[in-house]
Amino acid sequence: MLNDELRDALKRAQAQVNEWVLGKPLEVRLAFVALLSDGHVLIEDLPGLGKTTLAHALAASLGLGFQRVQFTSDLLPSDIVGVSVYDAQDRQFQFHPGPVFAQVLLADEINRAPPRTQSALLEAMAEHQVTVDGVTRPLPDPFFVIATQNPVDLSGTYPLPDSQLDRFLLRLHLGYPPEDAERALLAGSDRRDLIANSQAVLDPDRVRALRSAVHEVHASEALIAYVQKLLARSRHHPGVRVGLSPRAGIALLRAARAHALLLGRAHALPEDVQALFIPVAAHRLVADADGGDGATLAKSILHAVAVD
Image 1 (cartoon, rainbow, N blue to C red):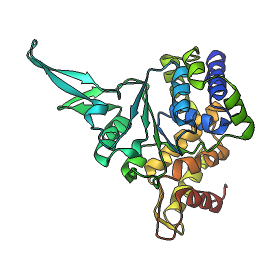
Image 2: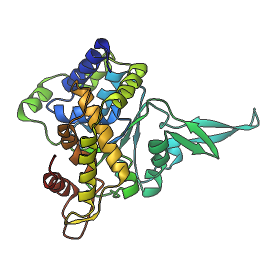
Image 3: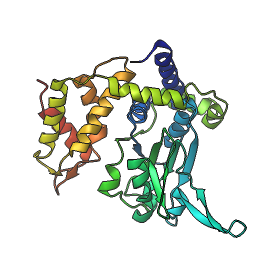
Image 4: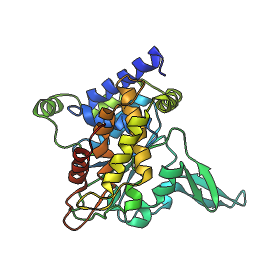
């Protein structure tokens, strides 16, 4: 498990991000869960609520290389993964890597790009590699995608396909800040200046060590059985047309382990699963015509399954 120095550094990193993203401690913790779980996070909300600030703050606190891609209707897959350009002097093609070759990639307003461009991230998110012109190239380690999307009822947006949604470990909603946090934002320094002048608390080696520590968090047979009951219930729950896959269950257990680690425990509890179930499951559930939204269905499933 974690030594005292690494445990303290993790706490300080969370505290630093909370200083920049005011009034959102739960959302910050969930973003750390996704990072430590070797997953990716989708933030869905209106513009101007701090989605980009959260991505910048995480990268700065963790000492990770950062790139941002603004998704637009004319963005091409090569604009993300890179392109091979012929060099007349060397008489060969030279690969120019795209912004995906970063440790933290902010895919801003991902649902403003058409599906063909959205899918360019699929291999990168699932396999931590990209294939261009038949050559497979590994991505940096760690590799973490934070994608933002505007609500689909806004103009110029394309709903993410189910296969793309499934690549995100969890989905967050930031919402408007509390009144006191908003007052502090209005009266304080620009968040971009604070982040630009900050010092990293962690570094890539220690982030990798934290990810390794997540695998050491114990999940009992009873906890695994609880997760399996949640999966089974999701497949027969009223209002659900497509329930959760085994991959969703693996993601839920991994996230629960990371959540326990963030809280200083060496074992995961049902409370960890319950805290993560809606963010992990809501965007993966497919409702029938009268089923409502995924978050409502996930909450209903969670309430329907008792802990033994």
